[in-house]
Length: 358
Image (cartoon, rainbow, N blue to C red; front, side):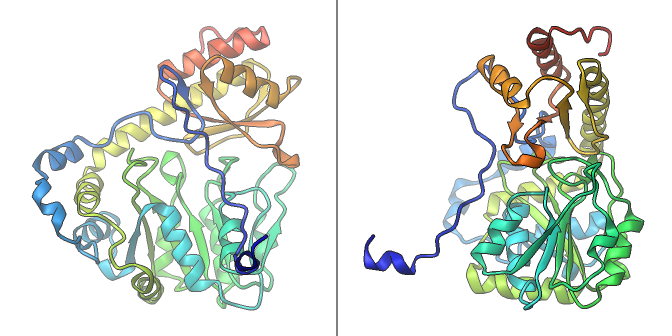
């Protein structure tokens, strides 16, 4: 090893879902929305002038921030935007998790949390889920330097009530509590209302899932004005121009089209509920996901073997080797056609029948 390598920060990076290059596959491994963004986005793109690309974007993303603020009934000073919710969460970690006390998050959750903690030198403790894979609010009523978890949780898809979240926020006035609501639009109730009541609560959402804009990378946070100011101070100390001009305009157009996004979410929810019933008939245990995916375990068949057999047939789902969840598969909810093909393929693999479910 070269001498200079002794001073390199060595991190095991986050591993995203596989992005296969081959065509004619069914991709159900990264929780992307199967439907296109709002037609309003297409209208914006048609009006974009390439000559404008020579100019820097608005560092404050004013048009997007105002559109989000108007949609969610908050002030622009209570909104932070970033390049995907990963960027928002990364800035939040850097801004708020600076205590000598450890940050708390679940042992089974979004696997980027521990990566950020290691990159930024943040001490953390993982809190075990209950035996039914749910989060116990009382486990977070203790000394800590901050708390973060998704709701619904990932990869389980299980939802915590707003009341249980308030228990955690109220019990921890000395630390910032971050609720990652990447999947909240698929059946849950957001805890955004609590940001009016608690100045230590930050709620993070994304355009990647319910608004079908994963490729544009838009995330946002809503919270007390002080929280947002501290985050912007960190952001502008790293890079003032994090979001490009096209994304700002497209994001503003998309968030204003509430009916389109609600209709898409309703379609995905309907397909998800049908899929749950079909998977149960195939012998899977199916926790009550409130996300745009299901997290399932077969009663007899190996998750790893099912994963490999599906992949051979051009269907990609997600599987982890982590001991607690190695028997589970996470399956994104695609179109009805996608799910019918998935179920038909699972019938071949498992020798079961799911007819008359869809």
